[in-house]
Length: 272
Image (cartoon, rainbow, N blue to C red; front, side, top):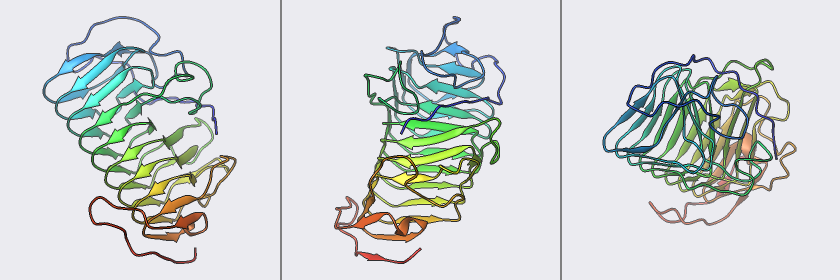
């Protein structure tokens, strides 16, 4: 499903915490992610990298970080482009910060920059977000876990803020809890471990679409409003190799799925 993204960020443009070329340019041809284009970012950084203010990775550019990448409180990184981002360590998204990472056709926006391109951004470690304003995660490979706790502008229609997680490969677990905003979706992801989606409260009645995912262990959904649903996604039931519990119990196919860390898990199901 394609959804229009209307985002009013909380962060004001300020200086980049590391040296980067200065230029004024539209970061992508897509919808705005940050409050302003900010500073272009590319190149190779052998150690850790901390970003403040608004930053973007332009189409066709690449950013390589050998250590951890941190999006400082209130900062924004717009890599919703055909650029390439590779992080050897983990990614940390701090309070009120915004991260857009990855690109694929039909994800949240029809037209450039992603209409004909699927990117291959990678995070060697885990992605940790604590009270983020939002994230746009598309077609990324995460070597560890995806953990997002809290955040969002509140379950309001203005500003209307989306939080999509789509077409991801996550080698360990995904845990998303307590985000409150306009719309949330977890679609077409392959997760080698377990998935928990908890207490996501949104303004859009079509929100909380958790569909077409392959979860090699357990799938647990609880306390989400609206309750987890297919919505108008056109998606298919999730596949789980362990058990499905709570709101996710209705839209899952349980089958043996190999888990790299321990083989197939026992299959059982509990009613929502």
